[in-house]
Amino acid sequence: MKLYNSLLEGNKEWVKKRLQQDPEFFDKLSRGQSPQFLWIGCSDSRVPANEITNTQPGDIFVHRNIANMVVHSDMNLLSVLDYAVNILKVKHVIVCGHYGCGGVKAAMQNEQYGLVDNWLRFIKDVYRTHSDELNSIKDEEKRFDRFVELNVIEQVLDLTKTTIIQNAWQERNEPKVHGWVYSLKTGLIKDLGVSFDSSAKLEPIFRVENKYVPVTPVEAEEV
Image 1 (tube, helix red, strand yellow):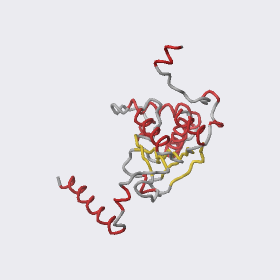
Image 2: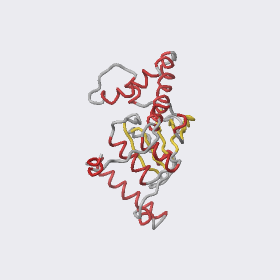
Image 3: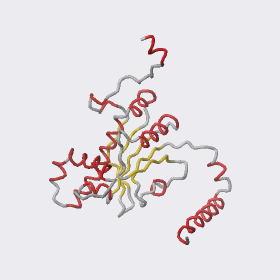
Image 4: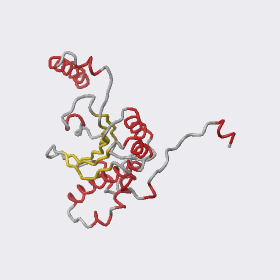
């Protein structure tokens, strides 16, 4: 219980420090949120979005999962994305991976890990897509690092294929979608230079031209 209680005590200490810095901090925070960023990151405990970007509570809307994946059937991810883009109107969506990612490392191997194997299959598909480049890298550590980067790039591309993102582009030319990688060894973030703000750079098959409008039961009967 000592370890457990340390979290509650830590919370009290954090509140005390915050109030010393700004007596109205929690009053202002409780009035609502208007973040400009959506962060899609890894669940790894060493990669806290606010801390590594030196931002405050309320600045970044966050979704995290193993290996920062964007899976087209993941309703959790899609719900977060829809809320951030269409309700909060974020201006930027960032996929941030990190070197040394355990999920990406596991996907490079042939071992069984349990239920998570079903999730790792999506990461393995990234390896399959880029197998020629990755297999040509003889140094295992460098191949691992490059796999982390390619995984981020593929997740950025998968974001741009969603109707959530493409509809927002058509309506307000936002948000911009970016790919980053964080280094646990240096604490620095690397911008991979992959950024999208329209569907122009997408392959034609993935472009959505018209927003879907649900048909009501009455309209369906008339048809």
